[in-house]
Amino acid sequence: MNTFEQYLQEFNSKVELTDFLLSFLVTAFFSIVLYLFYIRFANPLSNRKRFAQIFLPLALTTMIIITVVKSSLALSLGLVGALSIVRFRTAIKDPEELTYLFLCIALGLIAGANQLVIAIIGFPIILLMIGIYKYTTGRIRIKYEDKMLLSIQSKSDRLQPLIDTVTKHLPYVELKRYTQEKSGIDLTLGCKIDTAEQLDTIKKELDNIAPDTRIALIKQPDIIA
Image (cartoon, rainbow, N blue to C red; front, side):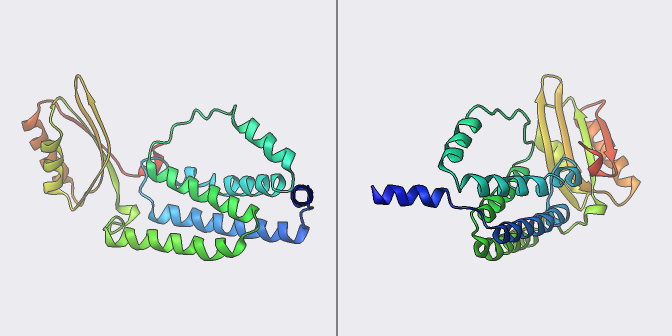
């Protein structure tokens, strides 16, 4: 019984204002760092700046919720019941986006639990490992400002010849989206195009694979929602 009473007392302990402010500042700082890191290193199809704007409020909201519920057993149980009826309808288009959302939530959880040492040590290590992986795999060798989106709509039912044609003429090609439909293939590629002649050559070879192939080039990927 004494152990149970002690457990309840720990749950109902008051939150120190100094600890709360320190956790708040640490969470805000690392959220901004994550925002800048995501814009620089991530390779999503969606608008990276607009998506990254949710990092700060998401991490801070998570931190505040955990700070409040950790001091009350009733609030903790109430939170479980409330979340059980919540349904999120927004689809995540890219697994990379989901990874960064988990980082924000993890940051809020750690800071809300007042484990700031883990946040200060672990968070930079995670970002460092992601950055090293990006460099070693060549994912950021092409500057973001040089990237374009190439959309291809072809009546062909084979993906590989289309990819090979584009890859043969461009220094950088990354598959962003692929849709197989009855009418053919709808393809979106992240790429770097140096000259207009490259685009003309690609268009001619794609027409040889499947007549009336349609292509569209977008200079700034960030305008894609």
